[in-house]
Image 1 (cartoon, rainbow, N blue to C red):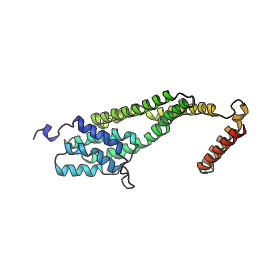
Image 2 (image 1 turned 135 degrees about the vertical axis):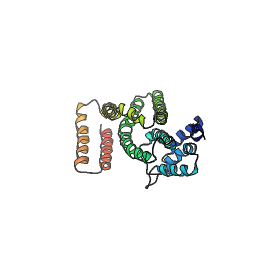
Image 3 (image 1 turned 180 degrees about the vertical axis):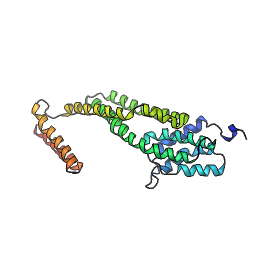
Image 4 (image 1 turned 90 degrees about the vertical axis):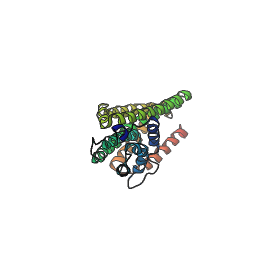
Length: 251
């Protein structure tokens, strides 16, 4: 049996199926393995081609069913990397335990990075810009912005999936050079500025400069109380909404 017969190339159609399955990674979320069933479903088409031997296929399936949990935006990248590693394992280039070591190292790191960069930065930025456009009555621009954000995210997923499969764990070095941690901090600062602009546009009685004083005091007091007194933020949210409504009625 030749090398090409033992390790046939993964077709475009198969890779497309694998990528589309990444959107269902959380469909069978469980408390034991987290997203492991979803990951196994994603890798299944590729594993069948990479491991034609039934015994090796079962071993690969067991590896894919190990505990797995990360930010869903990184799932295409990790799926590509894992398929690349399985391909190298089937060729005898890497030992089988290497995949689990890589999984343990990368998934939790990318999970924290995804929560910070995407959850706390990019998605908030997209939402704030959308709110700004809607507040100013630019509905068409808001729809265009929403569509461009959605499409850019899909392009990001496709490119990282391709890069992860093509470069394997080497893609992680490129990801490190992107410096997403510091970019996330910059985006959060930008979000703070956008929030102030939105606040200025929605402020009741903006004509009075003194209206800033009580509102600012409420926000600062709520932040200090939530941090030091460990009070639930839900109470402050209710109080904030009540004060907002009272200000609108009064002024």
